[in-house]
Image 1: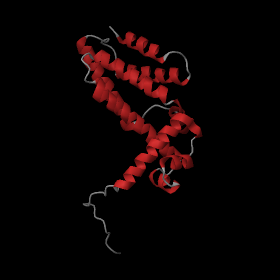
Image 2 (image 1 turned 120 degrees about the horizontal axis):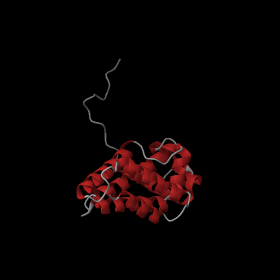
Image 3 (image 1 turned 90 degrees about the horizontal axis):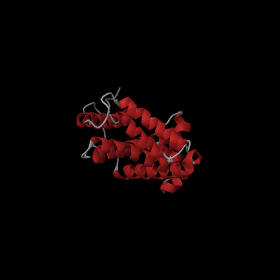
Length: 192
């Protein structure tokens, strides 16, 4: 048997720059199509919108579900980044938490079609893995600071914020009222 041309000490190769650009183009096109067309958007449309061949789409995302998952992870990463960059630096942690929840509402409201695609593919829109962990870390840091400041209830937990976000998603998905009012009322319920 011939020795392997790659050894375990060889670091994994970085994707070529053009491959990374194509992947980004596919993700951006898919996000826009799922946002506007929801679960009706198909892989050939994504390829056309991204200006790449269908083979390029499948090379990066072997299934439609994999593409939807990647777009959802991208969205969740951006939400977490907003929380870290914009909300954790708020002078008052309770204001940062309110801004975090409002931002989530803005994203979910603007991307109802994407949320519908995620739910159709996976049965739920709740983030998992790294995205969920990042969101919960931001919420936990904001809650801890707000407790120290005395601006949220001492018994408030990250699970409460998760429930608020789940309710927010349902209000938006079902068009069950003013989601901004929901966020205000939820934040009022966290006050001591």
